[in-house]
Image (cartoon, rainbow, N blue to C red; front, side, top):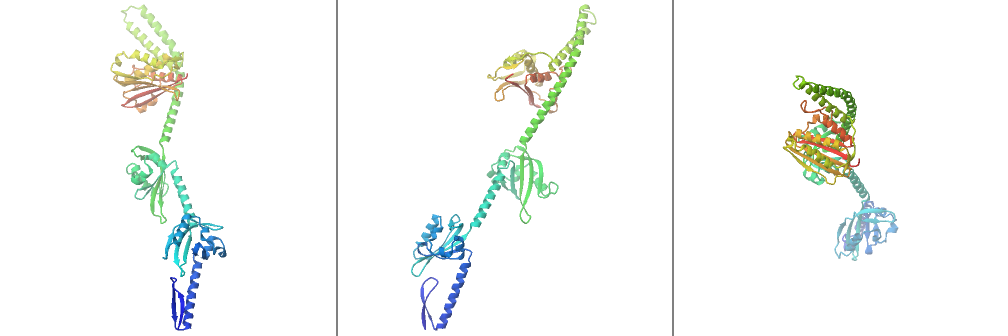
Length: 520
C-alpha cells in the first residue's frame, strides 16, 4: 500500500492510497494527459486567457493573449496586467476581485468602452474574470478577453451609415414618407413636416398613411404600385396628387412612390416622395399674369396708334357736321318741322366728338402736365363732384386714408378722371346700393403709393376678366357706355409708370388696386 499527496480541483491536498505502484503510474499518466489536453485547448482558444497572481502579475498567457498584446510571451510573463489597461473602472473592478476574501467568485465585466493597451495595437474588448483561492491562500484571477474591435468597427460603420442615411432623408427638399403594410408611418422627414404640418413623432405615433390623402387615394396608389402600367411593378412614376395637411388644407404635390421588399420578395413597406407644388404653381400664375399684362400692353399700344389715326380722320368731318347743323338751326324758324332732326344731328355729332376725345385720350395724343400732387385731395375732389348725385344716395362710402402718404408726381386732372371712372363703375356694379371702401397706403419698402377701391357689387365673371381693359368692351346696354372708360384709365396709369389690377369674385364684389411710384 502506498499513499501519495494529490491536489484536487478545488486546490485541497488529499491523500490517495494505491495498492500498487503500477496503478499509481497509470493514474499519473492519465492526469498528465488531461493536463496536456487542457493546455492544448487553452492554447487553441479564440479568446485571450490570462492568469494573474499577486499584485496583478501575469503568470500565464495563451497564444491569443500574445496576439492581442502584440509582445512576445517572454515579455508578457511577469508584467503588471494594469500596464495594458487605460480604464480606471476596470482596474477598480480587478482590485475588488482581489479583495473578495476567502470565497471563490466568477464575474463578468462588460467593458466595450474600455481599451486594452499593447505596445503596438489598441483593441476594444469584452472581459470576464474568475477568482480562485490557491492552497497557500494566494488569490488567482483568471481573465478572459474577447476582442470585439472588428465588431466595434462594424457597429461604428453601421452607425455612421445610418446617420448618413438619416441626414440624407431629413435634409431632402422633398417630403419622404414611408409606411409599413398596415399603413403605420415609420419615416416622416423634416420636409414632410413643413408640407403637411405634422411633427415627425406625432405622425409616426398617431397618423395612418391614408389620412394624408383624399379618401380612397391611398388604395389607388397601392394599386398603381402593383401594376406594370405606371413604371413597373413596385414603382410609380411621378403623378400629381392632392394631399391633406394637419388642418385639412388641400396641397398640390408631385408624388412618386415605391414598394420595399424583404430578401424573400415579400412586401414590407411603401415609400413616397412628395414635391410641394404650391410655390411652383404660384410662380406659374404670376408668370401667366405677367404674360397677359405684356400682351395687354402690346395690344393697347397697337390700338392706341389705330385709335389716334381714326380720331383725327373723324374729328374734322364731325366738326363740319356740327357747324353746318348749328347754322341751319339759326336760320330756320323754331316751328320748322326739321328743327327736331337738326337738333338730333347736333346731339349725336356732339356724342361722336366725345367718343373721339376719348380715343385721343386713350391714344395719348393729348397734352398733360405733371406736378407734385396730394392724391388724397384729388380723391376727395372727385368724390365731392359725385356724392350729391341721386345714384349715391344709397351708397355708403368708407374712407381709410394713410396720412403719411407724400405728394406724388402726376397729372391731377387725368388721375381724377381715373378715380371718377372707377367709382362710377363700382356704383353701377352695386346697383346703386352698397358699400364702397376707398383706401390709400404708403408702401415705402417698394416706394409706391397704393390706392384701393373695394365695392360690394355683383363681381366680374372670370371669363371676361381678360377683356376688362379692352377698348369699346362694355357689359352695359347700348347707349349707356362706350367701353372706353377702363381702357383710358389703364392708359393714364401706365403714363404715370404705375399699374392697375383687378381682383373680383362673382357675388362678393370687386377691388381695383392702383400703384403709383412715389418718385416721378
